[in-house]
Length: 152
Ligand SMILES: [Zn+2]
Picture (tube, rainbow, N blue to C red):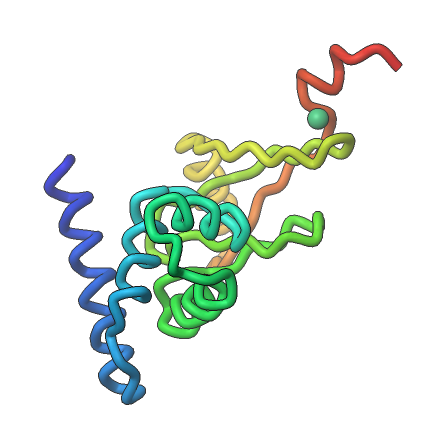
């Protein structure tokens, strides 16, 4: 399992390196550090969160640099954008595991989950209707435990 993760990581880095070469862009240390931080997280993130994580270790990396790097990852096909309607653009690994989301309408907390039986059922439904799925997003909206427990 661990080996598989490392292989994916290497593949993503190689893909990004090729993309930069093809575009005539430099593989800067900062871009590489940002990509590492993004891969380390192994879940969706947004610019402010990733910036805070990076700033702790690399104070010379600016917010705009992180933003531009995430845009580059998206263009390179490494990351994909997710919009859950809360005004934040999130990014997740394009080739990674798919996540579904629970979104609290009160506090805006987004919780990711994976459920292989949901995924299997979706694939079955699509197949039985002769449909080829290209993309999908599951977003359950409601109220989280914490908000539910709060007195009005
Ligand atoms: Zn909540």
